[in-house]
Image (cartoon, rainbow, N blue to C red; front, side, top):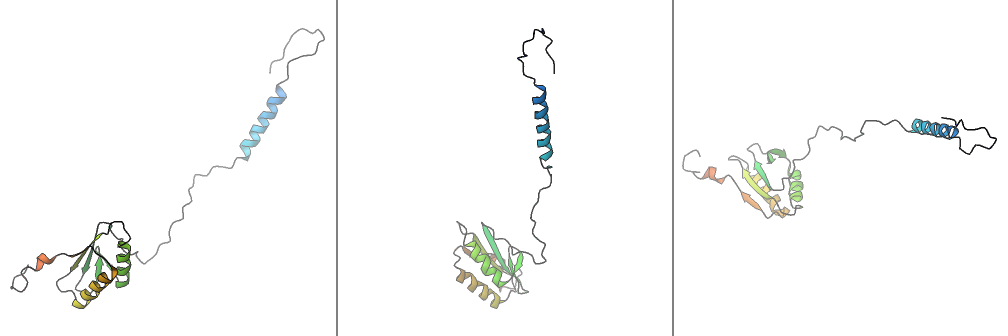
Amino acid sequence: MAMSGGSDDGEPMMDMNMTPLIDVLLVLLIMFIITIPVATHAVNIDLPSPTNNPDTPDVDPIKNKIVLTRDGQILWNADPISQGELVGNLQQSLTFAVEPELQFEPEANASYNLSARVLNIIKASGVTKFGFVGNEKYRSFGKGEEG
C-alpha cells in the first residue's frame, strides 16, 4: 500500500493503516475457501434391485383386452397373467376416474371352463364397461367355411 510522504511537522498521521486490515481479511477468505467441502458431481439414486419375476402387466386407462388361449392361458394386453393377477388388474382398473373399457376375446379352441371362470371373475369385480370382441371371425360358424 502507498504511504503518504507528506510533511514531517510532528503532527500525528490521521490516515488509517489499511495493510493489517486487508491481511486479516485475506487470511479469513482463505480459511473460508479451505473449509468449504469439495463439491461432488455424483448423484446418488436408489435403484430397484433386479428381479427374475416380471411385474404384472400395467392397466391401460383407456382400453384393456383379455384373451383366452387354447393352451389355457389368460392374456392381459398380450401379457400372460394368473387368475389372481386378473382380479388385481380388474380392481386397479376400477380406481381410475373413468373406467377403462374391458374387451374379452377367447380364441376359437379356448376352454369353456376357463371362459366361464374368467367371466365370473369379471362379473364379481364390478366392471361395467365390458364387451365381447372378435365375434366377427365366427359369423360363418357351423357352415363348413373357415372364416
